Image (cartoon, rainbow over all chains, first blue to last red):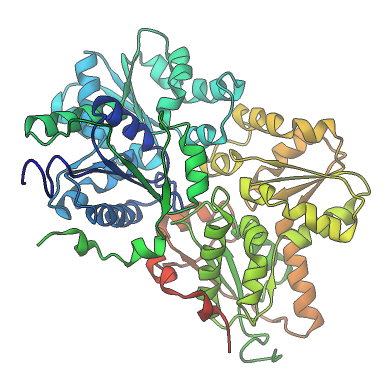
Amino acid sequence: MSEGAGEGGGEAPIGVFDSGLGGLTVVRELLAAMPAEHVVYLGDSARVPYGTKSPETIRRFALQDLAFLLRFAPKLVVVACNTASAAALDALRAASAVEVVDVIRPGAAAAVAATSGAIGVIGTEATVGLGAYERAVAAIDPARRVVAKACPLLVPIVEEGRDDDDPIILKVLYDYLRDMQRLRVEALILGCTHYPLLAAQIAKVMGPSVALISSAAAAALEVQRRLCSTGRSRAGQAGELRCFTTDSPERFARLGRRFAARGVGQVRRVGTDELESYIAAEGRRS
Amino acid sequence: MSEGAGEGGGEAPIGVFDSGLGGLTVVRELLAAMPAEHVVYLGDSARVPYGTKSPETIRRFALQDLAFLLRFAPKLVVVACNTASAAALDALRAASAVEVVDVIRPGAAAAVAATSGAIGVIGTEATVGLGAYERAVAAIDPARRVVAKACPLLVPIVEEGRDDDDPIILKVLYDYLRDMQRLRVEALILGCTHYPLLAAQIAKVMGPSVALISSAAAAALEVQRRLCSTGRSRAGQAGELRCFTTDSPERFARLGRRFAARGVGQVRRVGTDELESYIAAEGRRS
């Protein structure tokens, strides 16, 4: 990997992809920690969600998303989507000469560091079904107890835009988090990019003694560590954020404001037909 | 259109497509009314749902779905997906020499026939946002009052597979149907293929005096009327149901049982890359 300017160097952008808008929570954390970095974001909103689909389909879509980002010669790619991290990380790393950072390993590490007790994980059906957080925690602390729960209603609840104090939100959260409460988890990993937007309500249900772990924030710190330790971070003026979506750019810009503190700037469309035309092998650099 | 055997005739299949599994409720109604018909079904489960996406994306996906079905030389195509019916019917009809039946017009007609009072409609964000049921009712009875409500949580609630008496289901339904109750609608159109699976709970919330209108059943009757009146219906032994999905066939078969009374038989996969490779013009017959 070259350092400094040029391909893969400080001036190169960080590539970030997600199944939709949710990964903008990772971008928000990245830019809070490293405001000078350039970021290219791809949200596959035409095929969102990934979390209800088969591992094979998730891998295929994720490899296409990666192939798109590699065209921008990024210095690092972040898989902001927990589901894609769970189903496709090995395939993505095999397909990329650029380093790929996921959200699951950093999130698991942050949870292990935050407490010595049991760890809860909430995520999509696919993320939980694949047991990705359990494996990531076990790789650090094999004795640690982990309980995971799929919460398929939470993403649509966030996207529906209910008021923060809407009673449906709390009722659904109490329903999903019952096991976590009973098992007295000491940390709860928000294992889906949308969940930080429900952090206040989740904290209300779990109580003040449970540490809420945002995988988005943990992944941003991991990126910062990697770039700073190799002299590839960018200093100076605020970097440029370029957003691409496979669905309507107007809708992305409108809904994206809730996920990205400083807005998403100009959004451009890239067709799923274009993504499908990439062969996975194109993601490899020979 | 030729009649009897051969292309477009009695032996030809009925093509049905949907964004996912939900359209199997239409297949169930079709086969209940016309058990001898052959059916080819495409569920675009890799890109489901359509209801949260832009009209342009919905149209593009729907045209690809149609193009796939036209390869089976169907005598008629049913757009089982309310969202695709709302966003793409004109484009689909322009792209097909085979007649295309949607679910919205039949559903609206059934509701107008069922009552003289106000009509409620529940559906996806896209179906409601496009005002498709309002227009379809107005085309029959311009004076009729229609109130529509987007219910984004209902599809994930059905797919999550909660027990029928799960309190979350009733709480969410009371929340969505509050306006319908206050406005005293006399008929409620279930404007999404998943909603018939919640009919018992919806009836509990709305009370026995409100007629629940299944667009799936209304569309099946419309297909039967069209085929019988032109001598293109098939008699004899039970027809063959062939199912295709863009995601995992195993998952489709497993979850599909809840939607299709007699099972879905063998399910085959067709890739979204194949669908994307169809140019819309290929759907036209010259």
